[in-house]
Image 1 (cartoon, rainbow, N blue to C red):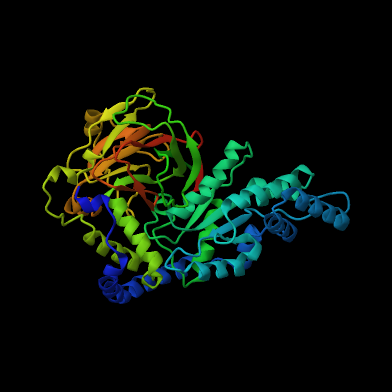
Image 2 (image 1 turned 135 degrees about the horizontal axis):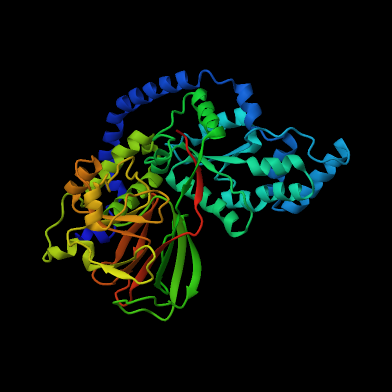
Length: 501
């Protein structure tokens, strides 16, 4: 890999002028495609009666107020008790006088997703469902809802409130955002498994991100038209009775030498310092104390050039938000940034072997029903390694491909599924290879299928490695003295996703 692949990305300001020109030229085609999708959604959603839909999903007023107050006060017990007393006073000794809706529903909206169209969608949802059933993630985190709002419903149910009990059991959740936002909500709901607070509400998706691969994989589409209320109604209506599918989720643990600093995405959280526990053979030196970070992903983890491009794009979008006008514009900017980061044009170097990932990392895997780590050689030409859980990557592409039975048997692979407990590991070479993979003319470089993965990143001439999971990139510092480690294993429970097809 070129030196630029593991160093600071090109300054976003240097790319602004060219990217602005690309943004302007995309406006006409963007408007045309959106108008066509708007018309389709009008036809599909025109037959839905708003009042009928509202009755099917609207939570009774007193429960909505109790949930909102529990989150605000951060005291679900006191809020539930007050709500129960009020209900007894209003209706006598029998709690839960209200009718239970067919599919009580809550929506989380990421107001930063979808080219900043999130606030518009939030307003439309609030008009339809009420303000208390629509949460802006910039104001209410999903973990706060689980800890306080959902706990308030559970405490009311324990007090004998039939309506609260039925609402809790039937609850469905919609997430308006990109893959990272959906993963954030799924991860917070996953804590219910750990805390034995089942049932876990299933999740539907309103795609507002750039890639929306989770949304595509479960039938919710690759984009969402913001101009029509009928599209909102159609999505909510599909979430009422859509079948529930299971999805593997993957735990990632990053261990790095103590003292190194990392700018964490929200998908990672700091665990503190500990002693590294060696499992299997390692090649480099390990410090006595390591700093640990953990997270969960649902679609993919990657290291290398594709993560560096994503890192640069995210910083550019944060520094120049006026460029992020919508999914189509974002993709054009992303393409432009890809060309500037070294995928296609690698500077001449005295040692061409340093262009690949092979010189900085050691890949080991565990296969199904196997407790031993097996080292896998990284092809020397590979500049990005991706561990993929879904069939969709990079805005709907399938880089793993649909493999023939004889090829599967020859390589010892099985057909890829989202709930099979396996990750598909593939590599991308230079930009031309990645481009052909993205247009699905060829498959990616197949490396392995694994039930667990460990990457040992050896310090050396590179200062930083770029990583990402589910579209959330970060810059990982590398020590010249000690190795860092990334370990991936399947979470013991599966997430629940509503199929939108």
